[in-house]
Image (cartoon, rainbow, N blue to C red; front, top):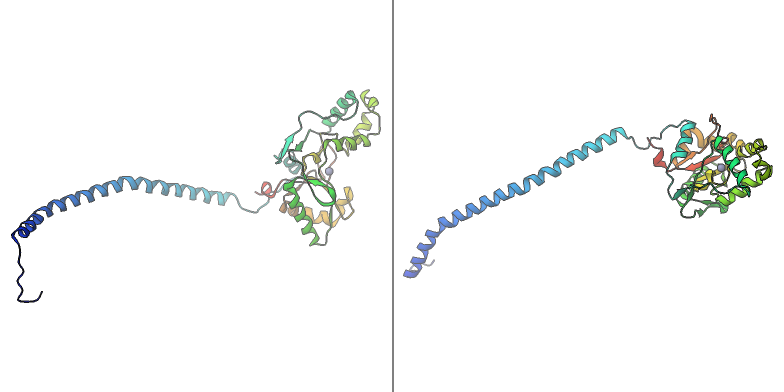
Length: 286
Ligand SMILES: [Zn+2]
């Protein structure tokens, strides 16, 4: 402020200043109260929220740590041949429904009853069928959509090893299985009905399931060959050696297991080492 200028203070201004000075302690008091209340509210509202997520985070981290220690990733379970068969039978195949009513086999209901009795004794059981029709794969075969890519991947991996895996059977409908079974029956249904042709029926059951009992009905089962070498000769091929090494490690990598490997002590259908089924890789991990 320049010197020589006198600042004039009006009496009203003086009065107002004195009022302001008097109000300040009240304002300060109010401010402190508000800060106090706000602080208190902050403590009671935020504190529990902070504690809860923290405790949950601790719990979940404990869970993931224990899971990580008990569930090693990418380690395949080791199966005996019986355990492969057991997994095949108990696995919940997606997009399938169980066959409840046994389908017609021949044109003779009594022969059908006889065939089913003999099939039951051999260990056959009713299987499941796809809900949504399977898709076309190589050479016009049909397979469940979910198993289609894993099969292509397996074939491609085999090619990289100079091995040619070919498909000889995939999905088979109940009607197709009926035609196949009847074509392989060497006796007439009327004779089967009398119970005098059981041996002939059993002979057919060694290789062929009656309609409704085939593992190929679910659309996840395939029969394969090495080039054109299939059935029991498949056991001696480099394809089988490659697939089956180390408890079928390569097959498992692509989600496949042998549905009925050799060496099974069973009265059921004969083992079929050329047959594989897709259950998915996850089902095979430890
Ligand atoms: Zn088969």
